[in-house]
Every structure is written in structure tokens, then in C-alpha cells.
Length: 337
Ligand SMILES: Nc1ncnc2[nH]cnc12
Ligand SMILES: [Zn+2]
Image 1 (spheres, rainbow, N blue to C red):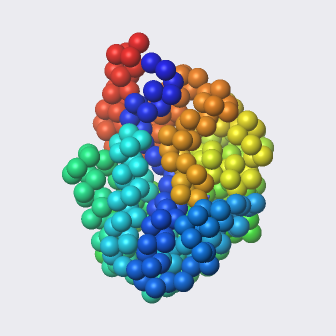
Image 2 (cartoon, rainbow, N blue to C red; image 1 turned 90 degrees about the horizontal axis):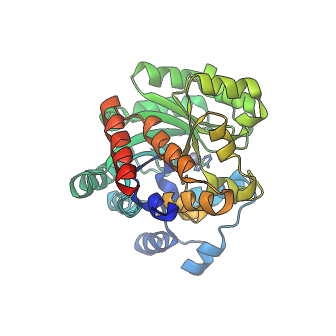
């Protein structure tokens, strides 16, 4: 089978996706009209044209502003429903989705509004399409640790719906060590832990995420290649990295896709995965990211298969589910041969 078809046909898992980053300009526009929110754009086209970034912060400023149109339960339902429709289209059978409670609670939109909206769309996707979904509650690192602790407490009624906690937003100047207590508390409650580190920030932040936050998975982590001792540690621990190629180009982490280090990290033996991060803002959902690696980095079939298998191995699915999908991939490949 041709590589381009294999990308589409393989069952895949996505492990790094911010639900607020799937807000398409059309939905943003419609919700702004619905709630009489004034947007600093004249049209849907103008929103799309504004998506030019030179750093993580230049993106985050627009991303938080865009999220302001999300006001009621049905808005969060629609947001989640649209992303899960993309999952169906891209043959994503399992996804672990981050959400940023503080982006909403700061505006008076509480857990009792967004969680039921997410939950309704998730249940539908499970029933209609058999997609499994885990949720990752992310703390905003530009805010304080007491605010993260308050968020963890506010979420209490929804703990059964949440698998992991995460750490995102402005990385530089907000090191993982700022959040030791809240991650320890989350771990004691039984949550898995992930954190963005080594996206724009230095390799030292990855060490901190491993040693101080005791993460189970690393979001981005591309700066690990600056530090050979760290590379060995990640390899030895079989730590999964959720790399987001198109995001890294849009946010100028690499100058262009030809210079991205994802396939080098894979060749160096790390458990690398491919993800879309904020697809509405970065111009591509999951399969677009795989296609970019094929077109610009010469990804071959064996790299593709390893990346897709890693997406299950690095997930928080139980071992029997992971094995089921790995067998499914092998049988699809042997039938295609
Ligand atoms: N790429 C990214 N890095 C940090 N925080 C984010 N929030 C949404 N996308 C993010
Ligand atoms: Zn991210």
C-alpha cells in the first residue's frame, strides 16, 4: 500500500491535543454572534489571516482571546463534537485530550458548564464511532501554584472523568519546579502526570519535569537533543514524547519542516509520537502532520509504523487495549503486503 494511504488506514491514537486549540474560525464566529461577543476581526477570513505567529506567546495571546466565545454547555459540546468528527475522519481510535479549566473559570465559566458539554460529545463518539477518550486537565503555568491547587480542588466532582493532569502555557520563565506541590497532590489522587517541557524552554526544564514533577509522559521535549545525558535517560525510561511537528514550525521552534528533529529522535531510540497540538491554529489535524513528515522529511513506512505503534504504547490505555491495537496494526500491514 502507498504510504499516503497507509497514513489514512492505520488506526491511530492522539496524545497531545488542546481542545481549545480545535476552535475553528467558523465556530468562533458563530459563537461570537450567538453570545454578542465582539471579536477584533471583520470576518472569518480575517481570523484565519491573523494566525501568523513568531513565538509561543504570540500564539497564546490569540488562543486565550479566541476561547472567550465559549460560554455555555452547548458551545463546549460543539467544540468537542467537531474535534471528534476529525478523529473519525483521520481514523483516530483513541485520544487523550487536554483542556485548560483556568481559561474558563477565570471568566466565570465553571466545571459544571464545560465538563457536561465535553462529556455529552465524548459519550456520543464512543457510542456512534467507538472512539475512546481520556481527559487531561492542564494547569496554566503563567499562573501561580496556589491557583493550580485551587483548580485541582474545584475539579473534585469530575475526577472520575479525568485521567491525568498536565502543565501548559508560557514555558520560558515558568519552570516545572514552580508546580511541585500540585503535581504531588494530583499523583496522590491517582492521576497520571504529563507536562509541556523543552518546547521553547531548555533541556533543564525536561530534567525538572522528570525529577520534580515525576511525569509519566513528556509533551514536546524536542529540546532534549541538546543534552546527550538526557537523551539516554529518556531512552532508558522509555519515556514517550508527544511531538507536534506543524505546531513547532508555526511557532518557530524549527525554521522549517526539513529541519525538524522528530525522525532523528526516533532513530536515536526515543518513544516519539506525532500529534497536532492546536490544529485549528496551526493548519493541520493529525493526518496532516503525518503527511508533512512524509513530504518534507522523507518518512518511510517503517518510521510511520513505529510512530503509530508508539502512539498506543505511549498512551494511558490498559495493556490489553494497547496490545489489541498493536495486533490490529500488524494484521492490517500483513494483509496490505
Ligand atoms: N503548544 C503549546 N504550548 C504551551 N501551551 C499551549 N497551550 C496550547 N498549546 C500550547
Ligand atoms: Zn501543547
